[in-house]
Amino acid sequence: MKVWVPMDSAARALGADDVAKAVAREAAARGVDVQLIRNGSRGMVWLEPLVEIERDGQRLAYGPVAPADVAALLDGTLEGHGPVEEIPFFARQTRLTFARCGVIDPLDLDDYAAHGGLAGLHRAIGMDGAEIVAEVTASGLRGRGGAGFPTGIKWQTVAGAVADQKYIVCNADEGDSGTFADRMIMEGDPFTLIEGMVIAGLGVGATRGYVYLRSEYPDAIRVMTEAVRIARARGLLGPDVLGSGRAFDMEIRKGAGAYVCGEETSLLNSLEGKRGTVRAKPPLPALEGFLGKPTVVNNVISLATVPVIFERSAQYYADFGLGRSRGTVTLQIAGNVARGGLFETAFGLPLGEVVNDIAGGTASGRPVKAVQVGGPLGAYMPVSKFDTAMGYEDFDAAGGLIGHAGLVVFDDSADMLTMARFAMEFCAVESCGKCTPCRIGAVRGVETIDRIAAGDAAAIPLLTDLCETMRDGSLCALGGFTPYPVLSALTGFPDDFATQREAAE
Image (cartoon, rainbow, N blue to C red):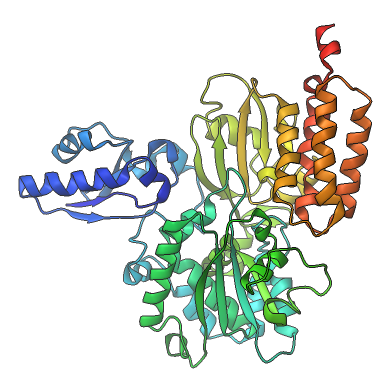
């Protein structure tokens, strides 16, 4: 009998380790031969720990499972959800990047290959660098870290640069509130990220790569470190990648916890052992990045999507999506929702369908008031904008941004003035201090919102003016995008900004 119990850190936080011990203990007591596999998460967090048992060739889902449920689980009397693939939340998805996450043993390279892994790399090895870059360009893949910059153009810039050394740097400093896709893929399918980085290296002529991984993800650090060791031992990394005669190797570097190091130039400074402050552009990291050499800096999901593009073809991937937003988006649904988790689907789904249908509305049962899309720098989208399609251009037209595709849902008890103040305070705390609009502007922003809360209506135009200065004058997205949540709260929910006297009237 095969039993899968997730080792994903969200499942572990909800007791998966105790469930795994209980399964092993109960099986030993019964003398039953159980193969216990610690897999990644299927992404249905409200069902974690989600335990799967193979019966009649199908993987049946049970969850949330507690240690006390294990006896009934092995008896076959515990009420379950049927085959995993038939659970509505899962069945509606188009899983390309996350196709193997939760399915395989994350650290079994043979299991990875048996489920389509390495097929993309084998195809890429038969191409030269220009063909690899052209394939990524044709797929329409855009950076999934937040900016949405075309990945192929970035790779082309690095490929065209002349240097004795080039680098691939993976940005795994996933610090946005409500986001967890990077962590999930690193814990549940680490070889797909490694394969994506190797293909990137072959494409642009880089022989060295780094994963900059936040220290708050100890499980991801452990899994990725072990996966790199296995990959090196099996010839996936090293001087002769899979016998191709081409070299690529990589290592895991641990960040120190600064939010701003999710910005690529701060990340590069930190990676070099310097203080994590933003660099002015130009020069672009693609020309003068890590140690002054041409560097591809891509997010985890961007690089982890590369293997499926080469496995299925650029055209297959590009056939999904909407407008210039091609492929799939990995939505991370969190906050006050009935069904939170990871939902991968083609770009184009309306925001309201994601919140009300897929996520099931609020967990509190109260009406939805707003959804913050894109992390702490994303706009608060009111219900009146729920017809906005999940696409880069569509969200831009609606005054928002998709960012890393995290959604945090709030019910009607949320005070949006308080949320706007939190956004400014977050910027003030996390600012690297390099530029004045961010360093000083965020502090003045908190003070100005406090004046509004105290009844000073004249402070509202001052706040608007301050946000415009931060947006236009900041060196990076931290200061430049903080106005998104602040102004969207101000314009979308003006009643929450009414003075105490006006509210009383």
